[in-house]
Image (cartoon, rainbow, N blue to C red; front, side, top):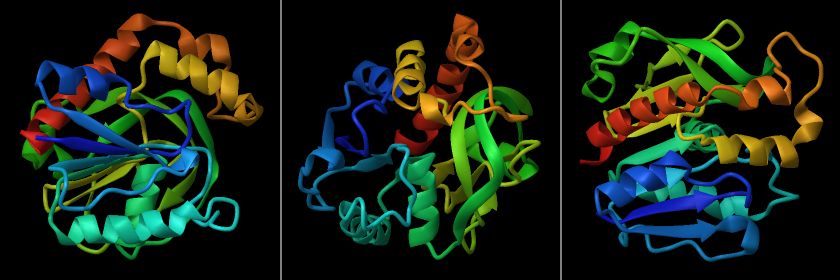
Length: 229
């Protein structure tokens, strides 16, 4: 299966998803929207991953490619292609599916616990996952649940940490794919986000603890196994 991904900034990549795809011998193709690359034919791939980015879903004047991306996502969804959206990717999917995207109560950046919902744990995609886990976050916006979708998880700061629709569209507000190098790239390129806040960690705390990254990668692998195989 060819996995295509949409990348919004050079410093937010596939992370551990690339390792999973290589292990499964799944070819990967990319559209780097920030570089002006054209979107592919929606029929040209078997699964789509929509990555994160510091822009908001409404920043179409600054990033006019967002309009084309939203139209493209609607076409992909219509074709019933499996889609995984992460952070900004989840917000874009939520908007395309008719839900509201808006500023959250406060930024949530760093390692913070999430609680998987009963609905998520009943899904084959999350079978065997722990009820609570520490995930990596870097966001300030949030979304309402699209019609027909179920909530995946919640945290103290954000009620909606993800959604699942028809077992083939997954939106994750949090990050399971982030590697140590990916976290360091975020710290270097988005340092202005690290303002004082109840749910904002410092760079040193975010980059410590290799076991944290291994734990989220194991859950991402399980999710990808269910969604894409």
